[in-house]
Length: 157
Image (cartoon, rainbow, N blue to C red; front, side):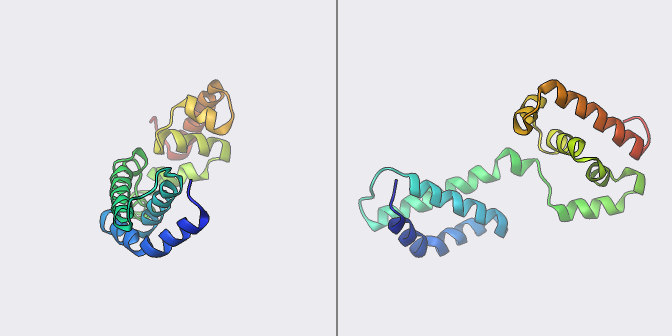
């Protein structure tokens, strides 16, 4: 693990370069900041020493490129849509079909499991682990949440 001085020096020296590479690949600031932190965390935890400043810079560039590629093909990135797009799509639909608004209106215990299952793609077992509840409880909450959504949205979905 590197010292605080080494990490501070590297951040000061290479931060602009890392951000530019990230922005080029990811095309938005929040994702850039996420990958930026990941790169410097890897730098902090990298156990080996570098042969030269050029070697250090090349390593950081390669880690940045790999982190950007990993981020772009991650499950989270592929399964999400920017909120702006959801807002536009939702406003174009009739009131009764605004599914996301209906999910947001659910009580928290139902909203959380519905969101994690359908929007983030977690299984009932994974949601149970995340929320500290039994798997069967998650199945019950999903069923009740779907029933509430059916009532709000109308129809048999």
